[in-house]
Amino acid sequence: MGCGYESESENYECTLGPELQMTAQTELREDDITRRQALTQMRQWIDMHPDIQNCRKDAPFLLRFLRTKKFYLPLAQEMLEKYLTVRELYPHWFQKLDVLDPAIQDIIDSGYLVPLPERDSEGRKVIFSCAAKFDPYKYTSAQMARVHSIVVESLMDDEENQITGYSHVNDESGLTMGHISLWSLNDIRHMLRCIQNSTPMRHKSTHFINVPTYANKVFDFFTALLNEKLKNRVMLHKDIDSLKRAVDPKILPKEYGGVVPLAEMIADFKKYLETKREVVLGLDKMKIVINKKAKFVTELEEQQITGMAGSFRKLQVD
Image 1 (cartoon, rainbow, N blue to C red):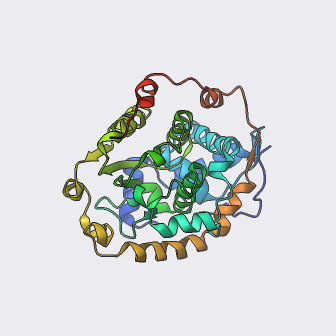
Image 2: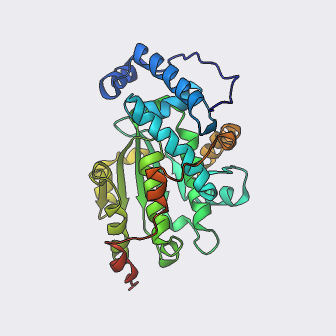
């Protein structure tokens, strides 16, 4: 039976301003009564679930799923079950997310991945990455994944992020075969399924710039695995000027035409991560018994990849 975290208060105090409350109501079908009833039903469902052994039941955590699924309770419950399951299936990607881990510290210090301090014009949190900052000969794909996981886990309890969603800006200059070869085709497929089906984030836009010509097949393979909604939110920019027409350049790092230097953004974000360290590490207390017969699990464990796999294997670097 789902239990644990019994000391958590079931009381919820809204921290949202009037504008965000209106957005939540119009886009997510959220109001005080709906939210209160949904939180109660989610907690009851967790307590009665035969496979959930331990799970957070505080409002910020449960609202991750309810808001992502626009308060459709069965879909929110399904996503939470998948979220707990992939943490068990892929602990090397989703557990032991410690900001004080030397490898994680080094990768964050490098500037590979950092949320921008200012939101975009739609109020969304923007997550910025630069492939050239990640050393594929020093670090593994698992360490790369854990950096992504620690970043998003530190952001997902924030109510404004839950409502406005996220934008992603990815600078692929410096992307090499070293980066590409870190990931097997199956790992790419598994990771994208995890992101789409079990990560409670509203992905509103994803921007790519400076994608090398030789990596076009990788990009095609990546987008082929996305659902139609996310495919339509992927934008490939030929240059920085194209990106600046889609994203306010003022919020970008100074090196990309913004105001705040990347190093300053990194330093501030590291301080933020340290304040979230215990909460993020505490996620490892959550436990679920994996249902091997569940459709989601059997799909993840399938090993056959068709379609783009043949052309992907022929990828050549000029």
